[in-house]
Amino acid sequence: MGKVKMQGGRPENIRDGDYVFTVDAAKAFVSRAGHDSVVFEFLVEGAETTKEDVRPNRVGSKVRAFFPLYRDRDNELTQDGERWMSRLKTLLAQVLGGEERVDAEGNESPVMDEEVTPRIAASIIKGTEYAVASMGPEKKAHVMFEVATKKTKDGGLGIPPDAANDAIESGQLNFADIRGLKLRCRAKTVMSSKGKPFTNTYWAPFSE
Image 1 (cartoon, one colour):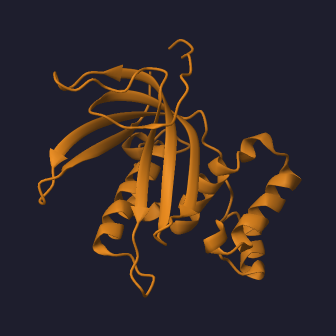
Image 2: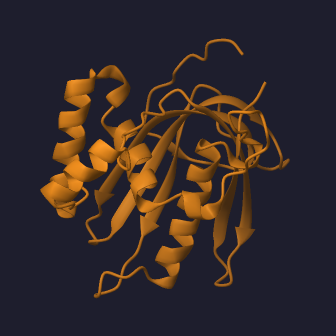
């Protein structure tokens, strides 16, 4: 696939279509409404129409997938928050190889849902957000510790310093920068039970 010319402007919502995306950025933050949110931004590398009356996002444009992780007063995920968390874990499972993953011996080894732990999710999201691929080992370790111990309201993980050190040294927390990773995505809009349109996204690893 040839080099895609980047188009300016804010990322768009993903419209109905079949796509090849390249991961461009990720960010985890606390929204103004006070709940955790995660957003992934992608560069559209390829796009095909799946609905005659809907034009897909243009090749070269930027799109985003937004995951609002709603919580109640006890900081537990609400039903909507659970649904969005499930969608986020599905995306991250495809980042890890999805059903197409193979082990070191070449045997099929599909990613299981329980493998996408909070530490794995944080490693991928924060590693991409802070672009750790461009850092040396010492700077990466410093950034991991700083982000791990920072309060969640300030964009960190809220892990106590000793636990953060243990997680980093054991490899349980090892930031991974997935910028440049290609994924396939099929987007399809349906009507919700409340009569509102909602776009489902179906993710898969990319292979030529």
